[in-house]
Length: 343
Image 1: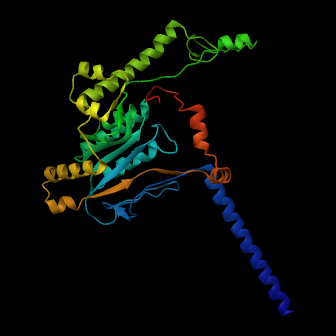
Image 2 (image 1 turned 180 degrees about the horizontal axis):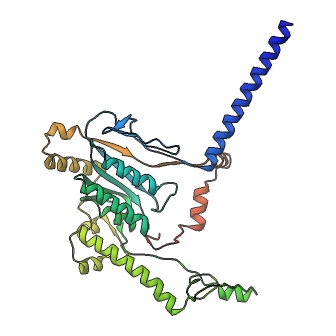
C-alpha cells in the first residue's frame, strides 16, 4: 500500500514538473515571438551617479562599475527611424537623458555608421543631444564607413567631428517619396480604382491618381522647408554662412578628405585618435592632470536587437536572412520626408 502511494506521488510530482516546464517554455516563446530584445554593451552596475539603473523587459540599461568619470560611446547605426533592427529612437533618447543625469558621465562620443533617416527622429535626437550638451558636458562624433544626411544632421550637435579616412558623409538634402503613378498600367489591364475623399489633395501621391501641379508644389514645399532647417543647422554648427552652406548642400556625398577641405568635419583618423583628442580636450576643459585624464574610461552604449524566437529558428534552419530578403527586394521605406542617402 505504501509502495503504491509512493509511486503515485512520484508520478504526480513528475507530471507537475512537466506542466511547469511547458508553461515556462510557452511564455518564453510567446514573449520572444511578440517582441525583439534590445540590450546595451557595458559593465553592469547597481547605480550610476546615485540613480538606479532602469531595467525594462526589452532594454537592459547597463552602466559603468564604480564612481570614476567616463565618456559614453553612443552608437548610431543603420537607418534612423522610430525602430528597426539596428536603431531604436526611444532607447537612444532614454540613454541620452540618463547620461545627462549621471554625475560620473562627462561626455558622449557618437560613433556613427548610418545613411540617415527620417526628419522627425533625426531632429529629435539632435535636440536631445543639444540639451545634454547644455548641461556642461562634451559631445564629439566619429564617423565610421558612412555618416550621411540625417546622420550628419545629428552630428551637428557635436563640438568636434572626426571621420575615418574611408568614410562617406554629406548628402545634405531631403527626400520624400517616391510616389508611383500606376494609372497607365491599370488602364492597360482593365482595372479601375477609385478613391472617395473629402478634398482634392487628400489622396495625393496615391498610385491610382496622377500628381497635379498643385500637389507637386505642396510636396516640394514640405521638402524645401525641411531643407532650410537642415542647412541652417549645418551653417550654425560649422560656423558658415547659409549661402556658403547651401553651395555644399546639394545632396552630394563627400569623402572624408573632401569633407575636411570643405569644413564639414574637423579631423581624419581612427576612432582611437578621436578618443585621444577628446581626452586632451576634457583634460584642458576640466583642469585634469594627465593621470586623471588617462583614467577616463570610454564605455559602450549600443542598442543590440535580438530577433523574435521563431524567426531565429527559421533562419537557422533555412540559412535565409529575413532582414536581407526585405532589404534587397523592398529597400528602405520612406513614408515621411527624410534626410537619407539613397544608395
